[in-house]
Image (tube, helix red, strand yellow):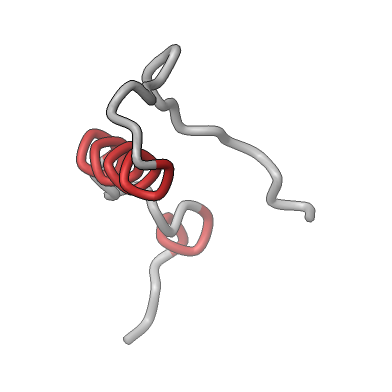
Amino acid sequence: MMLDDSEKMEPFANMNLDKMSSELINYVRKELDSNSVDYLEPLTRLTGGYET
């Protein structure tokens, strides 16, 4: 399967950030055995870093 240019530059552009946020915080809560763990701010997509 060939990727178009947008998929090469932003391979996770279609990722559901709300779902990932929920799954991540649930994992951290389980690992720390604490339901009091929460985000200070909602997750946001970071851009850049293509040169690294």
